[in-house]
Amino acid sequence: MPSSTASKRLVVFDFDWTLIEADTDIWVIQGQGGEVARQQEALYGTMQWTDLQDQLLGQLYDQGITRQDLETSLRGIPFAPEMAAALRLIKSQGAELCIISDSNSFYIDTVLKNHGLDQLFSKIITNPCHFDTDGRPHVTRLHGLDQPPHHCTMPCNVNLCKGRELQKLMDSQTWDQVIYMGDSTNDFCPSTRLAAHTDVVLARANMLLEKEIKSHPGAIKAKVVYWNSPADAIAVIHTLFGVPCRDIPSTIHRA
Ligand SMILES: [Mg+2]
Ligand SMILES: [Zn+2]
Image (cartoon, rainbow, N blue to C red; front, side):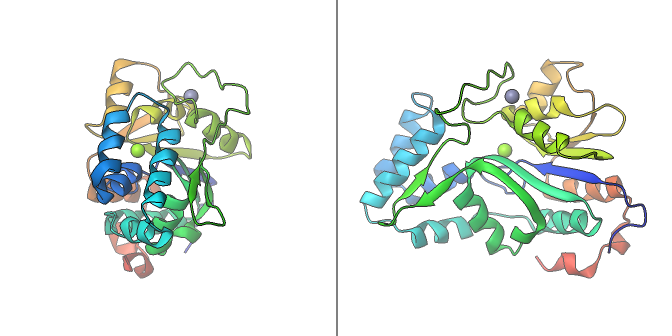
């Protein structure tokens, strides 16, 4: 049920270690074990991350790993019921929900559909993944080599400046409040885009985003609220949206 104060809120989420309790790229590849898992560790930092995941998925395909096998793996990813409830609460209050993630479209769609949450999001901005006619997955960079470099001076990856993507969403219409939720170094740039007084960064405590925020005092204009666990996160979100626990629509308890 929409809130009576019909303010326009944009809530943007990172995916890995924010909405889910894992990193999708690590979960899928390490879950297969063997040489491919060893290569993910050995090649970390030696080549661009998205290109590496594409290469590793190609190797899994060559070994006979199918789309269905990958989906089975993705269905095992831990998704806290509290986080699913938080998403439904935010949606019930009339806010617009988006994801900006360095994972890929196949992983995110599969996980969200598995939990019946895919319809909550109006936009998912991430590295595209498609399966060719032979069934081989291909992951490509969101910010591809066909485009000029984004030249962001923040700690953003070459394939994705989350701040730039968030800015496009913020500029697409007038918002009363923008909330950004993330955990990692590449969530710092979007956090700096939020406005003082109205906007809120929901930063996962004891993770790299907190370290980045604390080592750049003054860089974040918006209010920063730290959260530790999905149980913490839903409590923070109740407060932000002014919805006492007893008023949560019963449908959000489905997960
Ligand atoms: Mg993350
Ligand atoms: Zn950036």
